[in-house]
Image 1 (cartoon, rainbow, N blue to C red):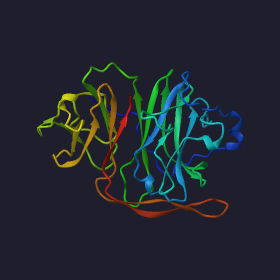
Image 2 (tube, one colour):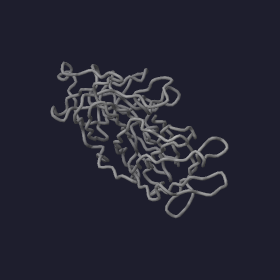
Image 3 (cartoon, rainbow, N blue to C red):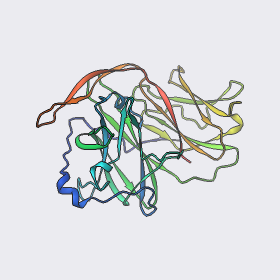
Image 4 (tube, one colour):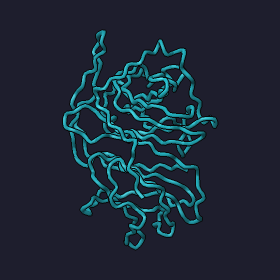
Length: 313
């Protein structure tokens, strides 16, 4: 069953959000990893546009404000601890936050229960990748956390307009606790994060070449995701993968993907990237003046349609 996300919010690049860090410093509340007395958030970027940002260490920081106390950052003791996403060729890549080395399933930051506003803000970081000063807010969303619940927050590319500046959407996905799964089954959730591939049709390819479409989405629009779908491991290939075929609404093959046929696990399949080429203006450098003006430069976005597989439990 498909669910259209009420939380998708596209925010124009020119919407500015100014933070007074000095004034707010004494009000900041620290975030702890895996604190069971709070709600939990994992951040994940599927953006191909972010990969085109200048290697002068631009990234996107995530400032979290309480709705009741408008614009009061609560997510870190210092700005250096702000969650952030970045793609720095040959230096570092951080498309997920937080990350615990060796952990396969998502890790989480803990926040106080209640409503919070998420501000995805252009950041400038130092040579170690540490986020510094906020500048421009690219996207905003709101999340309502309850006791000990887990939320996956996805930053995805918005449908591009040629030579425009970057735009993003935010997907809020509740992550259920590991349910009882029958022996011989896995559970799969599918997210369409490709801004230009159109509605997607997903089918399961069996070893004999036949396909199964039952339960799988046949009209998955951009920004939509499914509930968890049980898949029978008897339909796995000899290489212990469940093979998935992704096509457009005309039946044209877009790509194949697959998930491990490991019983009683849960996975999320994310279709991301661009089906066709585009040209955008992205942050290139900062002017060395008092204003710190951001200079944009045109870049070509190549065809990049692909799939990410995340194990969620």
